[in-house]
Image (cartoon, rainbow, N blue to C red; front, side, top):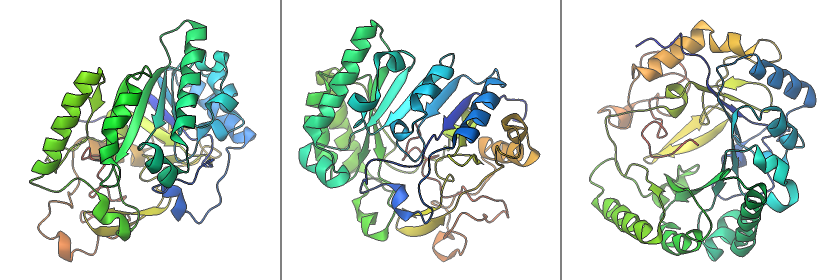
Amino acid sequence: MPIESNPLRKIYLELTDSCNLECEICYRHQWAEEPRDMSEELWNTVLAQIKEIPAVETIVLGGMGEPLVSPLFQQTVALLRDKQIWVTSNGTLFKEKLTASSVADVNLFIVSIDGMQEQMVKGRGVVFDKLMEEVDFLNRLKEENGKETPHLDIQFVASRKNIDDIFPLMDVLAEKKIRNIIISHLLPQYEEQADDILYKPYNNQELKQLFHKIRNYSFKRGLRIIFPETELKTERHCAFVNNDATYITSRGEIVPCYRLSHQGSEVVFGRPKTLRQYSFGNLTHKHLADIWQDPAYVRFRNKIYNNHYPSCPDCDLVEGCSLIHDVDFDCHGEEPNCADCLWSRKFVFCD
């Protein structure tokens, strides 16, 4: 099915790739480049171009940085209030940065919480009780505005180190006006993290049973859980392509997704892989609407949407293949190489 006529509907806007935390599992540890806030000049260009595309419905303020670190956060929310605004955050700056007026224009906050006291200090350097105070503050701002929004979702990155914390965490979150708890799997950055994953290619009865227990417990606590896959399935679904979405980095690069937004590495079922940024153009040189309709970008989206690309994890030749070590190109000669993407397999969730 051709999708070249599909308009751009969703934009992931990275106001900054800086962060106030140094989380253990963060992709940013691998960067050679220094973190950067989006410049005001580029920001003016980006917002003007977004406003010229009427089909855009949703703006996700997030990316690979903490959006509340950006000095342009509140202005962005105010100027894009006619869109659905989602914010992905570590939640530690709500008291410092949020106001009732800025919260009034946000539809959804997605806050990362990966465990209870010990796990949060070890993995994120965050005191759990202090983070709950930040969540309470957000809820008070919502009450002050007399609105049902913003909704609050919690994203939990599950691994062998923290999965047992999900039960006491549900006890706490049941009192915090949470809409969803989204469980996403750990995508290892280094080989020493490879044994921490919970998912398997096949025959993962242990995790299925655990998820069944978590689901039953969530019913008792009145919570809704969104689960990742436990093992490989044939179906592939790219949340960016299927939702007509793109990603604007803090430097103005138009990239197709989180995975290809910055350099880095990942370990896919024990196989190390080097990642690099794949840009279809920069907004300092070309208009967003023109980049979206550029033949190369349209061709890429058609390929992904129609699953016309290889699948590495269930390929008989994967162990001897030399193309699995990076994302430069796949065995069809196409670039970038999305054949090993665990996001499309629903092991890892995009917001």
